[in-house]
Image (spheres, rainbow, N blue to C red):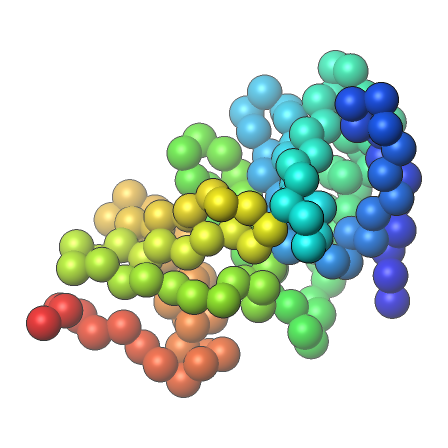
Length: 144
């Protein structure tokens, strides 16, 4: 079921199906960024200049925390002092580095997310569990 929202951004109106958006980034200053599906245009909503639309996005993100979907796996990941809410089912590849870090790229953007098992153990565990649950694969303890 589609979740259509009308958003004003840079003097343009967008009607976006939030169910097709695969990642949201919530910054400490309150800004929320998401990327339009298929065209990777970042939409940045600032609460100071666009409180109404900011509230719409925030309400949707909060719903993601309350709902479980069969075809999605939403996780919160803290990365570079920002909170990302990401649908891991939209990620097409994961890279495990010799130092244990896992890297993946947000769909519809070029932003890499790098999860360190030491500095971000909760997010790391969520990603590792998702990878094993959805693919059947696990990363080796040591890369040869």
